[in-house]
Length: 134
Image (cartoon, rainbow, N blue to C red; front, side):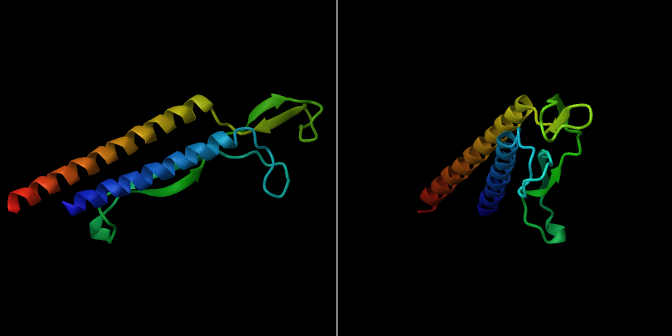
């Protein structure tokens, strides 16, 4: 039963990371400057999950295998007065769709809740088993 707790905990950690990535995307949806103040539109991040493979020395459960930068093109807005505008007057902004990010956040939250429910079920079964043995 402890293995099931480990698996559910790995799910909690993976979904928390996924939710943090979504939050960073939403927070930076209008960010066009990098940390040095140079023009570089924020690129959307995508968390990829993978199952653990004990045959390769990985624990059971799920983990974030990598956080990838979206290679989509920036969304162009016509702002001819901006110092960051191109020769046609367009400024590139992050290609972040708040609706998509909201759906990703909801999915991560629901998965997180499902892992909590699995942990609670494991705790309940363990408690009942101990009562039967005692």
